[in-house]
Every structure is written in structure tokens, then in C-alpha cells.
Length: 319
Image (tube, rainbow, N blue to C red):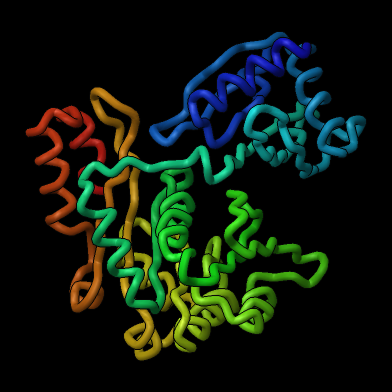
């Protein structure tokens, strides 16, 4: 049993997987690893062995091992040369077959993003130095949090950085990090208000997901802070529409919104995946409604320079 656990975590960490899935399929359990470029099968286990793996993690994460129907969440630290934080979610299906999803949270020292267009990294850093609200959209596992942390870390030598997250995904000793806990009244909105009293220069808000958080983020930006946050949207222009849907007035957005970006991790031919941004700022924020021509031009240039395949360019042409 311990060998399987060790092999699984070693494989997930070596491949920088963001999530591990243990899913029942017939008379087996399939283990899958989610990477920036998709989901891959790792190993198939007999049902009983799969249940043992789930029980192992539940025990060490202080979850109720005997409860296999109701949803549970838990956490543990996986020891190693560089410890990794693990977050667990379990639930049973209609046939009482339990599944487990494990999120891996890597320390900042292990996280770096290469850029398909290196100049974009410098451009984003320059934009962030202007303060205001910077939004980042993109699917789960596209490296958004890593990008936000990198931008903030470049400022941390001369700025106080405070994060509000659910949960804290990257441990960074140079930042003040607050974790959402709704049961204790520690919502995004409440923690942003608390954070303002600490007078940080930079806020990282893990995700804007409701009207209260959106309004709190805008208020923080209006008061002169740099606010870096993520939002669910299909492109950079959609991130703006999302805040408007959450009740943020357009005149307020025009005052505080510095940039809106859409990010993907694009698989390269010879190396690991690289970040590609579709970045809107200035008047582009209010005149663009879909992916920009620059996004497609950057993909075409990456094909021409043999960084990515034609098939990859086609896959990502719409974001």
C-alpha cells in the first residue's frame, strides 16, 4: 500500500499535476492526473485496493474513514525535500462507490511559468506597476495563481503583499496570507475589509465569484491598491462582462480596471508548456469583445518558429 501511495505522489509531483482523481469504474478504480495540458490516466487498481488508497488519505487528512457516502473535505502535508500541501474532497455516488479528488498545492519555490512570448511577462509586470485592478481569466490549471504570485513577488521588495484565498494555494513567506473560512465568518468580503486595515500595497484575491467580493475588490482598487484577481470567463473581455454581471458599475470599472488578461498553458514541441496571454489594457478594454487578433498572430508565430505544432495552434485559436 505504501509503495502505491509513494509512487502516486512521486509521479504527480514530478509531472507537476494540479489534481489527482481516484474514480470508480466498474470493478476497478482509475487514477488520473490533471496537468496544464489535460487529463492523463496513471494506473488502474482493483476496487479493494482503490478503496484502501482512499481510506489511507482520509485517515491522514483527519476525515471520517467509515463515512463513504456524504461529501467530506480534508488536508494534509506530504513530507519530502520540499513539503507539498494536499487538499482532499470525497463523495459517494448512487451505488455508494466513493471517489476522491486530491489538489496538490506547490510552494512558490517550485513554481515557474515559461512564456510563449517572453515580452508578455515584462509587459504584464509594467502594467501591474500602475496599480488598479488587474483581472486574469482562464480555465482551471492554466497557471493563473502562479502568474499572480510572480507579478506580486517582483513588487514585494518595496511593497507589502496580502493575499485572500480559498484555500491558500501557494505558501509564500514574503506575503501575508489569509484563508477564507465561511463557517467562521471569514468570507472574501470580510477578509478584504480586514486586510485594508493592514495597509498593504498589493492585494491578491484568489477568485472573484460573487457580488460582495467583486465590490470589495473594486473598493480596494479605488483606494489606491494594486488588486490582482482571477475570474471565470472565456476571454479577457468576458472577465469585464463578468464583473458587470456581478453588479459592478461600468463607471467604477473604468476608474479602476488597469488590465484584463486571458491565460492558457500551451504545450510546446521541445519543452514543457508555456504561458500565452491575451492582454487588454487602455481603450482595448472597452472596444474588444472576443479573442484578439494578436492572440492568433502569436500562435502562428510560435508555429513558424517550431515552438508548437499546427494542431496545437488550431486547438487554442479560440482561447
